[in-house]
Length: 231
Image 1 (cartoon, rainbow, N blue to C red):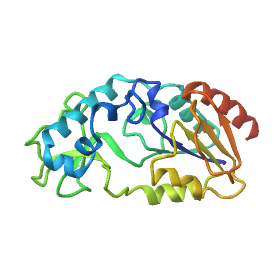
Image 2 (tube, rainbow, N blue to C red):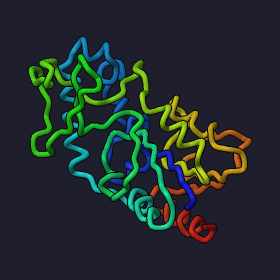
Image 3 (spheres, one colour):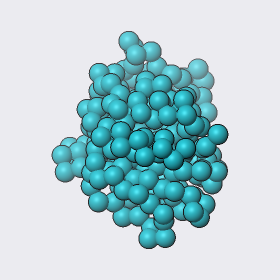
Image 4 (cartoon, one colour):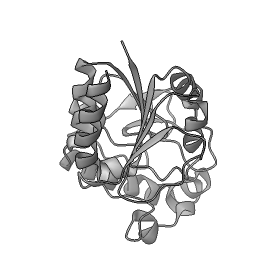
């Protein structure tokens, strides 16, 4: 069975109403990266950081998958699909994808500040985290998010997936954020690469790439029609 590996970014969830970080009206226009997405910011003002991610959870809980997500789940009927996502939302899972690797963490999970492997999934009805909320080891809880300056534990499994791809699809990412952007370099020569994004994306010139200059939902429909013909 053909192995499709997919790298997704903020663009696939933007259609569902998830706030992006890097667009002109994105979250980084409202918040400084240093304040809400670094270990140092958390040390300086943990209450503000916890509130920032409490708001992100509320947003995620009100959003539904769009056809960009749903199409990937439907493709599992025809081939093996491994999704590698830079997104911290759970819209791929909501859509029905069964193999999702989160590079930058998951907003609906928290972990101990003392032990990064002590991870808890939050109840959607009680998902706010405050100062004094503790993990089972007695340490303060923090978002299960990979902040700037922290290691990306899932990058090695992601590289292994990219190396085994029979086809590689990129959806809604600028390919500006590393190490995620470097995954395309691990795709084997002659493996077809597809890109869905309404904006220009800089890609390595040596790639055998087909571009769909469309949003996630429309681009996914056209990609699926082409891809399923080729199976």
